[in-house]
Image (cartoon, rainbow, N blue to C red; front, side, top):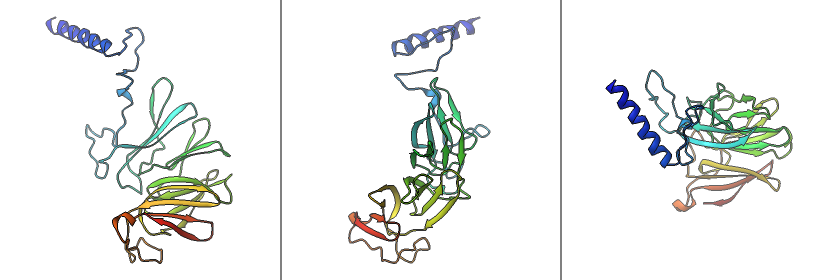
Length: 250
């Protein structure tokens, strides 16, 4: 009896403190806990509980790589620090009632790219392709390995194709309808840590930071990458569909 009274008193105190903080409680209809607009139930993890633990090598980070409203839900992907071949990280969606779904199609990895493809009416977020009804397809890391940081419109067939840009500098071409993938370039320009790509004015423009010496097995460009100063380590480059050119080292 004493224990029950103590628990009841504790609950009353928690509710009083919660209401003072702007939280709402409805004993007839359970609601999602909201603390000043923060919903703890929507917390996501790099690794979900495995026998009570969350420790898996290479999964130390748990950032949100991209977040996009689409098909009546909010979609988001978590990422690992360096997993071009996939990881335990997930594709999530949140509906209007604040229900969190972890999608079974998840392949993890280190994704951050996202784009709404207008012609096919699909959301491209990381390696996932999601239609207007919320159906999920995925281009797996066995087909398109990499840390996908950007998705850009295609230069010659934008109604069916897109470009995927990777942190290591790779450029893929993918059909958003069939999900067929072709690797166009392994690393066409110097610099390292590819971070962004966009198509405009008849050019695919990419940006990266860092540097890499020629001779690395990961480099297939033909110029010596020895920046004059740390400020010139990265690259802004463009591809016109035939030739690559460097706009600026920065």
